Length: 34
Image 1 (cartoon, one colour):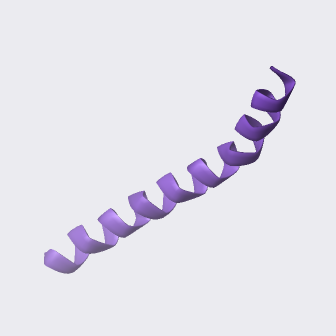
Image 2 (cartoon, rainbow, N blue to C red):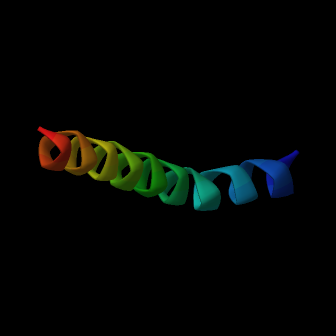
């Protein structure tokens, strides 16, 4: 369980960063289409 928690915490910030970049990317695409 400890190993699973450690890997989860390490990958958590990466997932947030990826989600943020996807949000920013989709917003930029929407703005450029208008």
